[in-house]
Image (tube, rainbow, N blue to C red; front, side, top):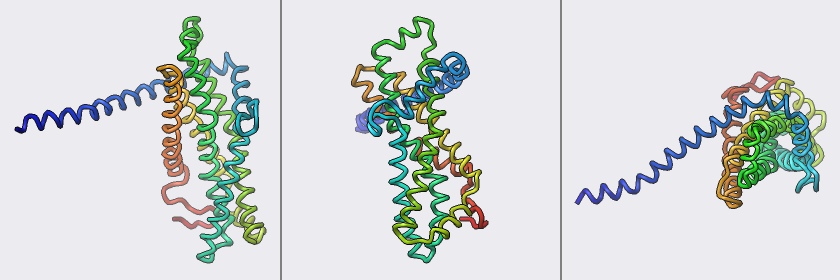
Length: 287
């Protein structure tokens, strides 16, 4: 009587085993794809400079309405302003409960710089730009345009993926700065103008805990997140299959994967740059 039970259990476990093997194979394919793209970056800069400039303009400003199709500047500004306002409201209220409302400026300098601006830029890049990359490359794949490029001895990885990687690197710098500025302005407006905090007190603690190296490290985090987002979305678009429906599935998988990896990479980079128990700049306090 035990043999049928073991056989039934084995049949139930086999699909999980197959999915696990397929997951490892997919991870290996993505890693190989990333290495191949990184090797193509110098050639893309040397041979496709004009194409990169066009992609940077398309990513940053686009050609249609400001939020719907006009690039990512308006999207990043709006998202950062709203999240910065939330930090002003909730952060001030939380600090005021324990009698530390004068430290609202320090909260703005730390949270907006180290976490908010890079993450918002990465998510906006994934939702606005990354899905566009997946759709573009996926449509080219199912229409056999990528195969045609390879047949004409044009390196498709260099022309289609490496150029987008470089363009995303360049475009994320102004996007990051726009988001950082919007979050600073929003938090200060809420804390000073809406909650009545002293502007001088706010500015003092804001500048006290904001050394210049924090902005540079935050920008480095934004660049790493941009690399992850662009690589993931380009991979799923470049390897799409199954017609238009397959392109839609690839865009969904790419967006889910990139958002999860943004959160994981953000935590790991924060630990790498500022430590597990970071010191509060200007005060020497930790934890």
